[in-house]
Image 1 (cartoon, rainbow, N blue to C red):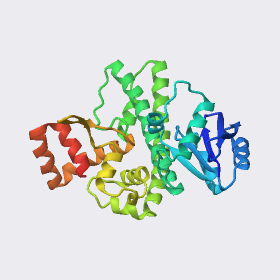
Image 2: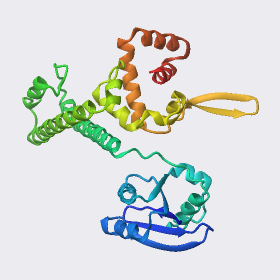
Image 3: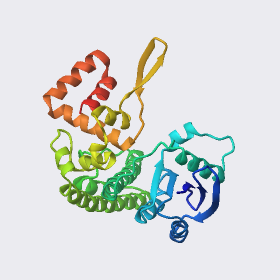
Image 4: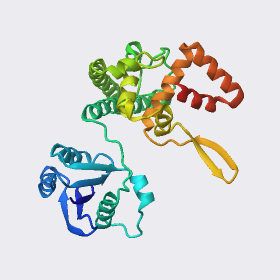
Length: 316
C-alpha cells in the first residue's frame, strides 16, 4: 500500500507517493485535465490510498476518476489540515508530502463528499441562485436610470407585466433608452431561464422522499427544501440535531478561560447558503405558525431581535 498526497491546482497538480515507512517513493506533476488525470490513475493501483484538499471545485474531476477506478480517496478539510501541519516553506512539493504523511499517520481531518445525486441537486439550486443574483444586479441598474430622471413607479412590482410596460414608455435620452431596453430584455431572458430551472427543481424534488418530508414544515417551499437537502446530504450522517446545528454554523461560539465562560456570535462555519435558507424559512414560519411566532416574540422582548432570529433558526 502507498499513501498518495495530491496538491491540486487549477492547471497543474503535484503527486507524492509515500510508503508505509514514510519514505517518498516517487513524485510527479500532472495536468488537471482529462489526459493528466488519466496518467495519474494509470500510475496508481486499487491498493493505494489518496488524499487531497477540498479547494473550490478543481478537485472534483480527479475525485470522480479515482472513485470510478475503486481507488480509496479522502478529501481533507483545508482549515483543519493547516491547523495540524502548517509549514513556513509552502510549495506544491511540500504540500503534497505533508498530505501523504498525514494520511499515513491517520491525521487527516476529512471533509464530507456528497454522493453524485446530491451534488447534482446542489449544482441545480446554486445555479438558480446565481441567476437570481444576476437578475437583481440588472434590476438595480434599471432602477438607477429611473431614479436619475426622478421617475416613481406607481405599480407594486416595477418588473411585472404592467411595470415593464411603464418602463418602456418612459421618456429618456436616446442612449439611456437603449441601455434600459437592453436591461429589460436581459431581465426577461433571465426570467425564462429561471422558469426552466424551476421546472427541473420541481422534477428533482418530486423524486426525493426527504424533500417531500421537508415540504411538510412551515416556511419551506420546493426550492428551499431542495437547497436544504443538497447542502446537508443524508440526515443520517448526523448523530443528533446538535451536530447538525454545529455543522451548519448556527451554534454560538464559546470562549472559556479558567472559570469564565461566555457565548458569542454564531460560528458561521459550513454552508452560508444553508444559513441563508434557514433565515428565510424562519421569517416565513413566524408569520404562519402561532407557536413559533409566540416563541420569537418572547425571546425578542428579553434578548433583542438578532438573538430571537438565531434561536428561531435553530428551533426551526
